[in-house]
Image 1 (cartoon, helix red, strand yellow):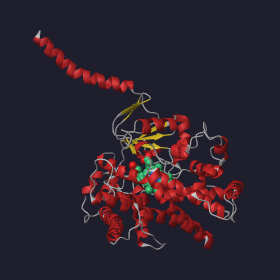
Image 2 (image 1 turned 180 degrees about the vertical axis):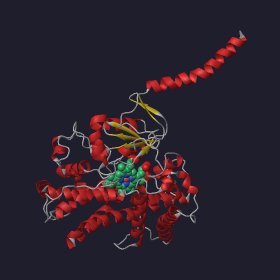
Image 3 (image 1 turned 30 degrees about the horizontal axis):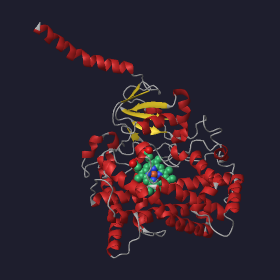
Image 4 (image 1 turned 120 degrees about the vertical axis):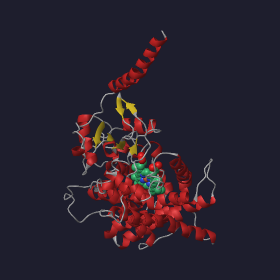
Length: 480
Ligand code: HEM
């Protein structure tokens, strides 16, 4: 009898896991997506030009979830607000990781900036400081800074309107540096150049396949002096540049604080305020958090997000003079000609608000979002999504969903006036999803609104070129 029990136990040990494994496999359907090739998977299905539009078209065939595997790396593209909400918001404890490439690690980018950090205790600490400083009530302390930066923008535009792109760029960059460190910068400031260098580095490391080490991580042990070691030299030189980015402005703030000359900023608040909760932060952590706003937002091209929105809005105004006129009429009635619009005017400027929403919807600044990494195997709609999947929210597709937005390609702010219940782009992916949603969104949104209404109040935007000669309005890329 005892022998029979032993035999049964061995059988159970052998077959139960296999049974569970096969039931689990059978119970989960394959995820929809194009058929992979052996070994390389869906490498030929990767799209690098206008991918959000192309994948949105594919979603008409596959549905709102498209799954790929490229050289063993699972990728999932999400195309509806429902699925994005279910995965990123409702299951955010497992859909909040980030994929850090070997090249990023070589550059010392694993423990900062926040946007790149993987989900875990360090990320939680940093996120808490951001929340404490940039939640709407505290972000309001930066409103005077927004007012002066947008007034400076108007002066610059009046002098050289043809350089509008440069002026937008300066406004976004200088606001971020002043918000972070309380340091005023002019156009040629070395702090701006340092941040520009960081943008270039990030743009280089973001190009898929640009560095072999990202495809064959073992190469990270390759010595820099050996043949083909130039990637390692490059990584080390960028590492030094990023160290400067963290340390130089931080040292300026500390010195000013010591001599009582520092203005209120994110950095001074970290140095002088206690952080709520049981959090211990080192100076290195603080430097990284500050540099996340200054360099890191540049670095991850988040500052260009602000820039891209102002540019999108300018393009929309060139293409639609009648919409521009309508917004200017509203400004004339509510504000008049004797003063500039202020943030407090916002509740009375319904059409201008709709204009900002439509600009964000029409061309979201980060059209494919910042990808999240899935931390555990998951089952969704009966399909298994494996741990380690990189999950993209196709924000462009979500904001061009015909079920909500009639003629989604057309620029029509009135859609929000006629139907205020339409999904607001701010809550539908423009600033991301779940626990990783952009902590700078309140700051960014108020600055952009103020810049937009002040430009419309002071100038008329038009082009002397032929408006019909705009076959491709937007370039593809991480930001627009
Ligand atoms: C129009 C302007 C902006 C847009 C469209 C934008 C958009 C985004 C998006 C899509 C993400 C990724 C969210 C996700 O992973 O789901 C993000 C993250 C982030 N943004 Fe923004 N952003 C803007 C401005 C800013 C500004 C001004 C700051 C700095 C104050 C900022 C700080 C950050 C940080 C630190 C993260 C990383 C959050 C994390 O990974 O936990 N952003 N932003």
